[in-house]
Amino acid sequence: MPILEVEHLRKSFGQTLVLDDISFSMEAGDTLSIIGSSGSGKTTLLRCLNFLERPDEAIIRVRDEVLLDASHADRLSAQETRKKRLHFGLVFQSFNLFPQYTALQNVMLAEELLARETPGWKTHKAEITARIRAHAEDLLREMGLANRMNNYPHQLSGGQCQRVAIARALALSPDILCFDEPTSALDPELTGEVLRVIRGLAERNTTMVIVTHEMAFARDVSSHVIFMDDGRICEQGSPAEVFGNPQQERTRQFLSRYRDEN
Amino acid sequence: MEQFLQQFPVVFNSLNVGFLQTMKLFFVTLLGALPLGLLLALGEVSRARVLRGAIKVLVWIIRGSPLMIQLLIIYYGPGLLAGSISAEAAESNWFLAFLRSCKWSGGEDGRFTAAAVAFIINYACYFCEIYRGGIQGIPVGQEEAGLVLGMTGWQIFFKVKLLQMIKAILPPISNEIITLVKDTSLARIISLQEVIWAGQAFLKGSQGISGAIWPLFFTGVYYLVANGLLTVGLAKLEKKLSYFR
Ligand SMILES: Nc1ncnc2c1ncn2[C@@H]1O[C@H](COP(=O)(O)OP(=O)(O)OP(=O)(O)O)[C@@H](O)[C@H]1O
Ligand SMILES: [Mg+2]
Image 1 (cartoon, rainbow over the protein chains, first blue to last red):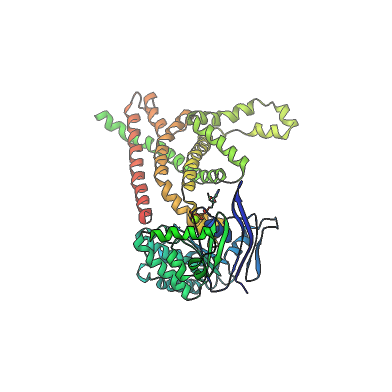
Image 2 (cartoon, rainbow over the protein chains, first blue to last red):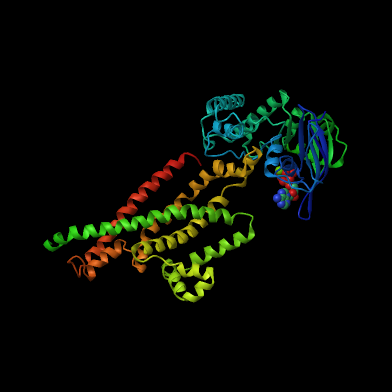
C-alpha cells in the first residue's frame, strides 16, 4: 500500500498554470528526489503537499486516507487543515528557525503546544515536558548537535541551522518529510554535513521527498526520481533509469548541463 | 536669592502635584494606547476590507491633524452637541436623549477623562502604524514554519511573532513614549492641572506668589528627569532583547 498518492494535481497562480496533472505515488521508506530547472514548479508542489497552497485539482491520499480532494469545493476548517498537515513535515531552503528560541526550544515548541491540547496535560505537565525534551535532545544528538542545543540560531552556522530545522521537522514524526533544496542556501563547504544527515535518514527508511539540485546526491540516495519540466512530470523512474538512461530529450539536456558543471 | 529660597518650597509642592497629574495622564495613555494600537494594527492587516479601510481613514485623520485640536474637539464637542438638543426633542427620542446626556463631568475629573480619551486615541494611531510595520516586517517564512508544524494562528502570533515584533518596534515605540511625556503638556489647552499649568499659576498669582516666571522654567526639569529615567529603562529593555537576532 503506497504511503502517499498524488493524483492529477493542478495548480495555477492567476492565469499561469504552474503544476499540470501531477501524479505519483511512493511507498513507506522511499526517498523520492524531485529535480528540474528553476521555475518548473518543485517548490509549489511541496507547498501543496504541506497545505501552504491549495491545488485547483488534486486527490492526495496518505495511507489510503484522502487528505485532500480538491473537487470538494468546501474549504477545510483551520482545525482540519492543521491536523492533516501533520502528516507532512517541511524543511525550508532558508531554515526559518525561530530566532528567539534556542536550538532545543525550536525542536520542542510544536510538540509542546500539541501536548497542551491533550487531556492529561494539566496533571502530567512536568513528565510530558521532560519526555518532549528528551525526545528533542535525542533528535539533536542524532543531527550531530549535542553541544549546540542551547545556542540561538544566530550563533549557529548555516549547516547547523539546517540540521536544527531537520530535527524540528522530525520532532512531530511526520509520515512524509519534505525538503525544499535543503542545501541551496549554504556555503559549499557546509552542504556535506546536511547531506550526510539526510543520507542517514534515508538509510533508516525515513519517507522523504527531496527537491534538490545536488544531482550526485539524488542519484545516490534516492529510491525514485522525478524530473519536472515546466509544471509537468517529464520523466520518472529509478535513479539508474533517470540518470543512467534518460528517455526524454528534455531530461538529457537538463542532466548534461550538470555534467558540464562538474 | 532670599526670595527664591522662600518661594521654592511652595512652588515645589505645587509643581509636584501638577507633575503627578502629568504622570497620571502619561501612564493612562500608555495603558490604553499600547493595546488599542495593537488591536488597530491587527485590524489593519486582517482580511476584513471594510475594517481595514475604516482604520486607515481613522489613522489618517488622527495623524494628519494636531493633537491640540483633537483635545479641544473631544473636550468641548460633546457639550456643544448636547447643548444643541432641546429637552423636548430628547423626550421624544431615546437616542437624542442619550446624546444629550453625553457630557464630560465638570471639574478636573472631566478634563482628565477627556484628555485621556484624546491622548489614547491619538497615540493608539501612531502605535498602530509602528505595530503594523513590525508585523509586516517579520518574514513570511516564520509563519509558514509555524503552520507546517501544526500551530494555530494564535500560537504563531503569540509564540513566534510577538517577541520578534516587540524587538523590532521597541526603538520607534521608545521615541513615541519620550514624545508622549512632553506632549502631555498640550492638555494645558483644556486647563488640565498638569505641571505647566501649575507653574504658570505663579505667573498670574497664586499662594502669595505672583509674577514669577522661574517656576514655569523649572517645570522643564521634571520632563528632563522623567525622560532621563525612561531612556535608561527603555535601553535596558532593548538590551534584554538583544539575546537574539
Ligand atoms: N505565489 C505565487 N504567485 C504567482 N506565481 C508564483 C507564485 N509562486 C510561484 N509562482 C510561479 O510558479 C512557477 C513555479 O515556481 P516554483 O517556485 O514552484 O519553482 P521551482 O521549481 O521551485 O523553482 P526553483 O528551482 O527556482 O526553486 C514560477 O514560474 C513562479 O514564478
Ligand atoms: Mg523552489
